[in-house]
Image 1: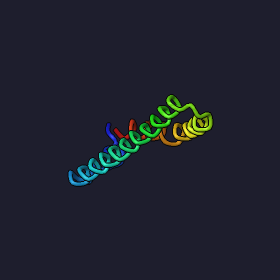
Image 2 (image 1 turned 45 degrees about the vertical axis):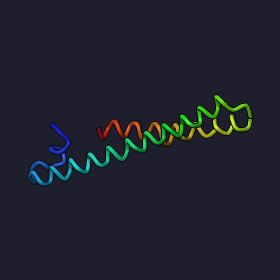
Image 3 (image 1 turned 90 degrees about the horizontal axis):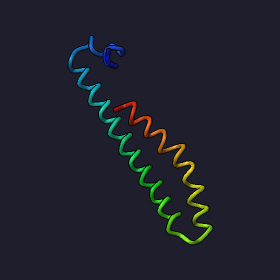
Image 4 (image 1 turned 30 degrees about the vertical axis):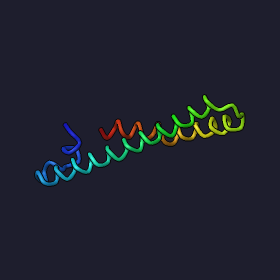
Length: 84
């Protein structure tokens, strides 16, 4: 049983099913691109912490990495997995 059948979309015809699939694909691609952007932001901070010698920059980068992980990387990865 697929999601379209659960939502009752299959009973409305092929056109509604096509619109639902396009919408689902759009949501998946949007979330996946956002997730990739969050991963690149996280990697930029990792590279900064590994290459910098200034303690303030390292501390600021490490403090910034936690919210990026909890509020961007993990939720977007889960949303990408669930929509894909």
